[in-house]
Image (cartoon, rainbow, N blue to C red):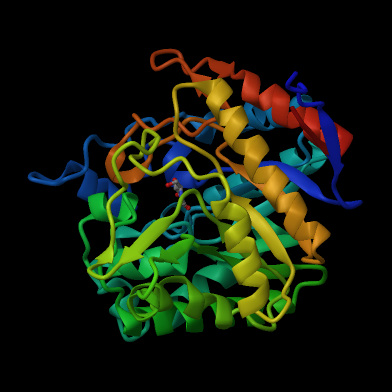
Length: 399
Ligand code: NOJ
């Protein structure tokens, strides 16, 4: 007789953070001074729909954080929007600084640890018009914005992410079709932009190091690049500037964020489409839960032991039980990496809410919480309660 599997629990280290992540442009709504807004409304674009009101989280953030907290999660990663804080070159909006400071206060009052991302893909329209990351004064402009944003952080935000996925941001700056980016197509990144983003990261870290208690890092899209036998060279050519380089450049940081969802197979002709017969998700990516822990292992190795924070991981699906399956499998792999001696600070699920998945619009639903398209009423999914249960136990129950 076949034995039925017995549920067992995997304990996570003391102080491990459990939470969820979002990004301003994807949930706030009406981010009209950002570079994405005109792009979304331009004719002939591959972007399937504009972001519009998104999840209206600009007005509903307190409710969103309360749902996170009530479920049992303790950490919320969100981004602040440069395009709101500096809508016109040199003009700083006090009201928007106050708005984001109120978000931080709300998190702290609820007992949530905030992680604040300073730049999550979107930049002010004027900055894009002036050449974006290719402009001669790009680093200075970014540094000035970071200084401007310091009152949002005060002396009580401890986790700050300077730049989200610079390896993807470098491709956006390269003028790539955003549809490819969202599908993690693999255009050649602009290496000059990559250097500029690294400079921006360092300048931001310098500024932040003057503020007591901040641990700053950035988050890297790791993509579990896997070479077919004999294709290691091809993998090096494709994979290297995209994630390995950024991880190596993170040596000496306080922490490094790992974000991974799926894998990319590298064959003799480069990255390969998802093979037939493989389960795919609403983004068209292979269902591949080990990706995140593979990213964590390579981050640990390439940074020479910088503490890792899983700042995003999740699945776009309309099948919420499948989201739980995916996350359970991913967390089991993460636990094994921790058992091997890798320092992991926490796990943040992408995403707290269904949101605007860039060029793919609203169809790929990554959220632990859905919402009504007309009323914006929040609809927590079973996966939110499930993740909250693991968080409260600081342990994963493997079914
Ligand atoms: C990474 C990005 O940071 C986020 O903006 C995006 O929505 C998710 N991956 C899913 O593609």
